[in-house]
Image (cartoon, rainbow, N blue to C red; front, side, top):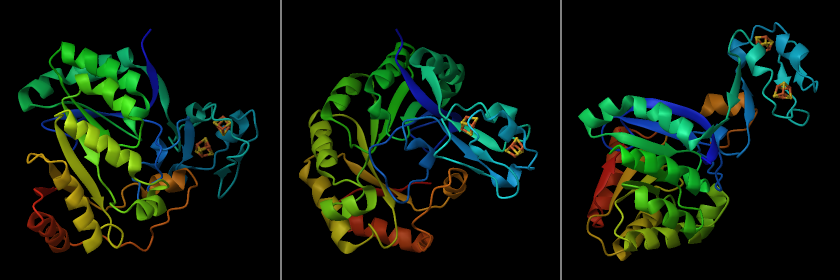
Length: 302
Ligand code: SF4
Ligand code: SF4
């Protein structure tokens, strides 16, 4: 039987999530709660319904549909999250796409049938398939089955991981994974806990394990002003990468952005980093230079 997972998006023609033109499969569920997360709809491992206020006409069809009286009709309509059973029935009744279903149960076979349609683009660009999230290695069997199908058709495979899963998940998926994009966010365990909800012990342990296997890894860091752009963090992350003893290991900075903000509103979730400012290109370049000065090959994500 094919493994399944909750999929929120299968995004084609991506050029930022691995080499070449790629299809990115976003899976639901993540053990971390990074305060800057740009994909809040992928954190919980259950279906969620989002409400996009600017698209809503207030027609009331959804409220009539909901068998659980979880929709409060009228201006300022909100989903009562306590009463909502996440059945998703209201989504299909909205003519205006103001309700969004975050999460669709799919098998690895079904996902592969979709991603293989773009094989021609992968072949001509050196691209392939990337799984992201959320944390894709919350579903190691699903990822491994999907990537096994990909490998069968010479499609390149990449995992974007926060690293915070049991080592066993890496052991299961690594044999069919061509490239790991592995986040190294914060070196200090307590500061890591403060901003992501957990310390970094498991993450660093998995990075050591994976590096020891000779896997192809690009470390990545969401660069959050005032949180992980400090001298102490730059030195700590650099020292960790150097300690792995592989000269091919590089770091890519992913500058902070606010593109996920509308999804926080759709889910009635607070966004805690309102005060953070977007960095200027010269500030990002300066941080890149500091990593380079500490012996780390460092690039900036486009
Ligand atoms: S059905 Fe759609 S447009 Fe109508 S009230 Fe519900 S969310 Fe708004
Ligand atoms: S997901 Fe189901 S329970 Fe929740 S608001 Fe929609 S119809 Fe009601």
